[in-house]
Every structure is written in structure tokens, then in C-alpha cells.
Image (cartoon, rainbow, N blue to C red):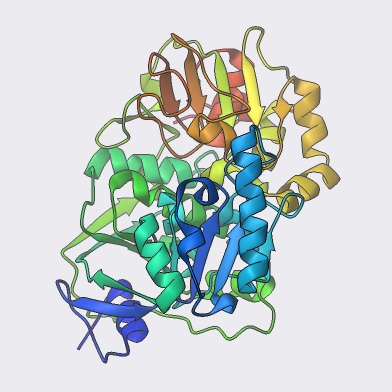
Length: 421
């Protein structure tokens, strides 16, 4: 029986020969991840025994270093939990970062695996050919104790990538183009393929996979092609890798062709990205108060590099705040070694500690009433980054950096020297 990517991975995890949409399956979980905020909100003290500590990781990421006594107490509880249950993969302050970045760069998400975490952007792991999904606190506690979870196998929407994308276009633009044209994918898996996929680098695939949560996809998943396998081998040397590819004659609910040569720098308008995105050229005279580059979607090294290139020799416009948050300590360190952070600070940006921070409107960059923010983070709904009276637009790091320099939402090609069609 032919299967899609998600059908194959869930079948393997459930010990079945095959699955099809609508099946309920109980799957073994390869990696379960706990976050700092859970230790102040969830009943983790009730866990008497962890089923397999070697399949658990704890990442301090949302509120790091602790901005209040509550978060400090959560950190204390997390350290005690790790010690009590023998969890060795504990990424404390100093070794921390945004969870999905840490998992990728530490080689803790690999092809064919099932990954669970309470964070909704756990789907980022789909770029590495894993069935990765955010779940509720009760489900995570269940997995900690039993090592397994149930899923209903979803039908799959496949996006076939064709053509050649512009150098000014990245994974964020691809995602916004798809979200704006096709809308939500509720109760579906999204799978990517097509001849142009080979030319989409891993960092951009990770952006696209991360953003799958914004169109309500159950899973967003990429095949384990040569690029994917090379990335995993580099970050998990010597690890057992079991790549999964879809069957050539797999059945999809829908197959949609995306011509990357038609994708332009794109902006998600305030409120939602679903059927609410436009090419940046369609916006006129929208001034910005704050610009943000960071999060699990766009705080990667390549994103920091892009921002530095756009702003090299330029300044952030007067009255604009540009906040840049590397996605992990490793990204921060490498960006520092390469001089990207110095370029950004010289341009007038603020480079912050590696944390979720401004993305979820918690600290280090909350926006105020009436302000306009252009963000390269994960979400733009009302109240996401601070005041519900603020307007949040979403775009790529190149578009955000260019707009920070001009003081208005603008096409990055204006500053990158690319000839516009």
C-alpha cells in the first residue's frame, strides 16, 4: 500500500505495515521536550517515573534569563526535575536557546522520528523529516510516563515546488505566499516536494516547517533528501539515520504546484496570515515603530547574516527600534565570530539574549498601544507581541532589515541592488 510521508512515519512508529487517513495509531515517541515555562504552569511534580530519560530533553527558552521570581522558581524546578529523573539532555542558562533551534543543532531531531513538545511550533522538526507536533500539557505528561501517544492519521496536502526563486526571496516569503493563496490546512498534514525543493536550503525549509502551525496543519514535513541527510549527519555524527521518502504513487487529498519564480518578497497583514498576505510592493507608506528579527522561524544564523548584509553601511531609521534575537547561544556565538552582530549594533540595532522573548510578547521587546511592528517571528495575531492595540505585520528578515533602515515597510530589493521585474 502506497503512503505519504506522514503515513509512513506514523506507521513505523506504531509498528504497523501501513496507515491511511482516519486511522488511529499509538506511536512510540523518540524525543519529548519540556520547556522552562512548563515548570511554573504544569503538574510535572506529579510525575513519579519517566519512562525513558534518554528520550527526554529540557530546554530553557521562553523566559531566559528569568525576568521575574516566578520564572526563576520554574528554573529551580526544572533543574530539580532533571536531577531527580536522570535527564542528561538539559540545556540550562548558558547552553540554552529557542527549543526548536537547539533540537536541530544538537542533532536531537532526525528523519523518521516522532517528536513531541508543548510548544505549537514543534512542527519545525518536519524540515528534518520528523513527525513533530505540539501537544497539550496532559499529553506530554502521558508521554513522559508511558513513552507513547496516539494520533489520528491526517490526509495530506502536497506542495510541489518548481522554478527558480529570486535571491531576495526566502522561506518566509514562500510560506506567506502559500498561506495567502491557499489559506488554512486544518486537520491536514502538509508535505513538500517537487524538483525545486533541492535548491531550498535547510534553514529556509526550517522556516517553512515552523510556520505550518500558522495555517493549523497537524504536521508540516519534508522528505529526507540529500540536503536533509547531510544536515543531520553534520549535527548528529554517527547517529542512526532512517530517511523516509513518500511513495511515488502515494495518494494526496490535494497536490498544489508552486512556481518559486513567481514568489516575491511578501508581507502578512495584521491579524492572521491565512488568506491575508500581499507582495510587499502592494503596500505603500506604512511607517514602522519596531522591527524584530528572531524566533524559531527566523533567528537562525543565515537570518542574522541576511540582516547584517542589508544593514551594512546603513543605519536604522530615526524613531525605529530594531531588535535582533539569535535563536540559540550557538547562533549568537557564531554570528559574533563572523562580525554580524557588530554590523547590526553599528547600524543601531539591539541584539538580545537567545530566547523567545519578544516573539510571544513576554519581555525584551514588547510593543505598545498604537505601534506598528514588522516582525520576522512566527505570529502576527492581535496582542501577540504586546498591546492588542498594536498592529503586527510579518515578513522575511531581509524585508524587516530593509524596512528598519527606511522607516517604512519596503521591498528589500530596493537596498539589495537586485533589479526588480
